[in-house]
Length: 373
Image 1 (cartoon, helix red, strand yellow):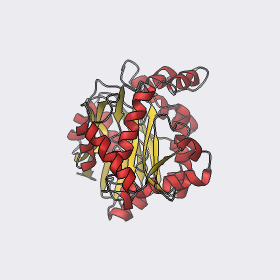
Image 2 (tube, helix red, strand yellow):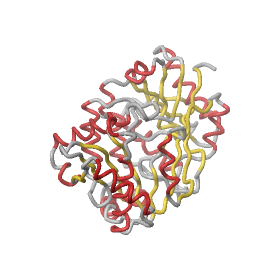
Image 3 (cartoon, rainbow, N blue to C red):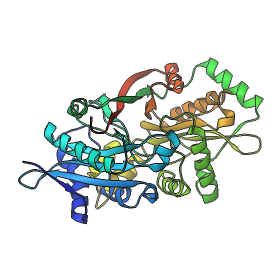
Image 4 (cartoon, rainbow, N blue to C red):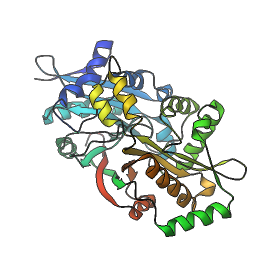
């Protein structure tokens, strides 16, 4: 009934990329990725300089795509954590367990031949990409950098022997209520104690050397606090900077510096572009770019991308300073709602949202199993 085929040609690749457009055609929550971005991620991503990856499609008797999967081996991850794991991502399938079984078993078979003993996902090559299968919040539209999937995916994972490795949680917070007066006083004390001040991201992103420095600081900031984190290579930093810095603006983000103008902490937020991507339907042209341009100037809803402090400044209260600044900016630009980036549920940093009016938005899961079980 079904046939598994490895993705080898350009036509196969485009079938792989476009399959979710058909699968989720009638799903109002699904946010399509730009096809051009997907081509780059699957064929030219900087991580492919050291990662191995294979892709497969499952087709039915009529040749129609019924499922897809990408298997990735990141040797830097396995060396860092002492594991022999293969990652799976770009996993999508129709509501037929047989399709899911064929996809996962094909990925497992290849990985076993490469010496891997465990499989986990959905993940990207590194921690910069989309990861985590949605388990709660199916009625919500995700941020552009997060996965969406049908509920039955999780049933298939359980039937295939996967168990929970970790969960990430996201909240929808009220962004225009400012911070409590007590938090404002704490921020002022910390700012004065350490002689801190705010720099300009608009100026920073015009200087390639400073942008590279920022991303090195960003990498260092999360190397010991983010679950499954893999420090970025120089090529990955260059790639991420070329993409993400275009969206960064002082309007919704901030950069905290010390008296020597060295980076202390940062808060990066983007206007939500999810609805614009839905209208674009995977294509920038002829009209997709217009929807995106409009969205980038609408701050009613923002996606909180990353917030953090460099290692030597962590646990010194600087979070109060940049959270206050972000809250003040939200009021100024008319930002009503903010969607937090996925954070591991066991990370104490999640507790910062307890100070805000909030509601659960999404929960996503990384599954894991031993290969062959």
